[in-house]
Length: 446
Image (cartoon, rainbow, N blue to C red; front, side, top):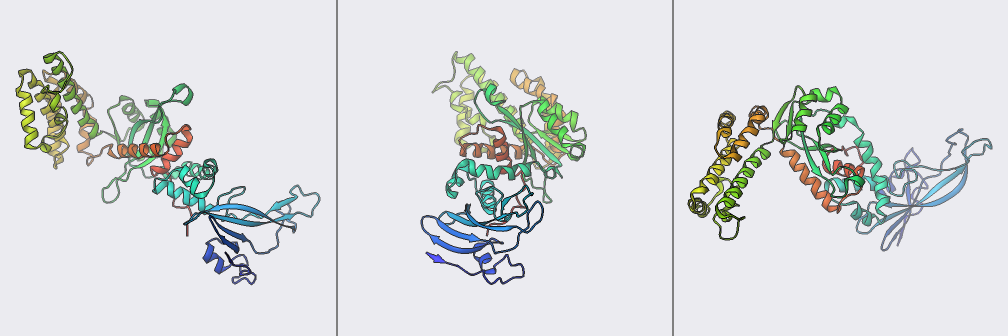
């Protein structure tokens, strides 16, 4: 046990509310340390210096009514830290004043009626943002309930989410959907949420993806409503809009982002080619053997090889591929489909954008005439998305990759929390994790 009493009886600053020694020790202005006790919890007794106080309603000098102890939870160290604040109380002497008795407030210490110090709230938000912490885990460190911590954190997140300045300077916008719950939609609402991500490049040309918002539903209306709410200035500032091949999002971009260039995501285009190879392999497997793939079937043994890039195959894998294709004349369809998928993949691997565009135009001119129905269907799909497909080569390789990465962060934090039941809490938590909320104004934790 250690005591630190009387250190502020002779104030060392003109302010009379600060003690340099206590401010340095505790890091909290406006209060001084009276007593420190170390045990399973570090308990620090604090109070403010004596001063005159006027009634907040009428301004009459109030009469002191002593103090009351208010327990606050502070940033933990090796052990949890609890502050016992000897909070002053006053009474207004004016009989006609509606205030009556009131207590002192130190805004830099704690919010009115709060049980967590302001810096504990700032620390918790920083841990949630940067350290992949959970609300439950932080609540255990602070020795408070989950609801107590979230009630302190949520207003801060809501205030930052309502700040429209976080939507400024967005020149590249990505959009994608994800499933946030698997419960009954009638009780919990739509399973899918549409996420908007800032994909604007910095001065060095790098993308620092930032989650802007999550809205319920996966539809043109969901995207249009969000774009409309952002205002005309925001929409005019968007130069590139990346998306996966979903017509609803494309229609919303055409309606609301007339000056923006829509870019079809490279990952999804390559994925379409890989799916075509799988479809052809399964069809040929069924036609030649009369059953689904089994161990020992030539095509079943190369299913993972068919999903890889040709440049990544080892000599052994190339030999396995050749043996499987040569095992039956009907397997030639699988090989042709695989070659088409490799051509599509090669479009995005070229170092020269002009060469990549030339290859892409060659694909657009040939795939839809292929006798293999799955490849022909892919060709028709790409021709339907021609402008967005070719825009990749005129927008410095813009893609929706940052949006897919953001979905990975969302999935991580949802697993850490073991799921969410409240969509508003889910939105705020993911905006914080995805960098969509500016937390720099929060005070630093000493």
